[in-house]
Image (tube, rainbow, N blue to C red):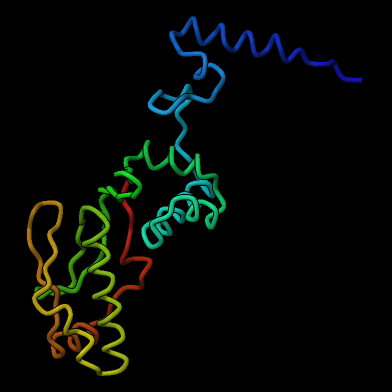
Length: 191
């Protein structure tokens, strides 16, 4: 039969080690209070990170943190800590405001041709993605009205250079005939 553990002694040792390191009692227990640094700050990896990113995407659309966490199968507390640690969102009153400023590398179809752009934040990357989807549908259906919302639309890259999204049907046909890349090569989150 295995040796029985002395949980009280283990807990006491954990609290004592935390006190020696100058940490609070809650940090020593492994459950730091809000605003306190975790004892072992861990970057989620693999499937855990994918679930947290999925929860962030759901939070963007629904606006409800608890529902986003539940749908992505992560705890609401874990999602809150991830959002705060990575500075991806913050609460303003009762509303979650997305503050995700991570750089994204994405291929855009501009007036100068295809360009691999690095943009800051989600909004310009989303605009480019919607433009690419509209261009793809336009090339399949020849419906030029799909391009109308993007006439005059511009995107700024991280260097501050402004790029105008291409809406000319003839130019898009020329670019399509020249060949292109799949979505896997078009969009990449940097960090």
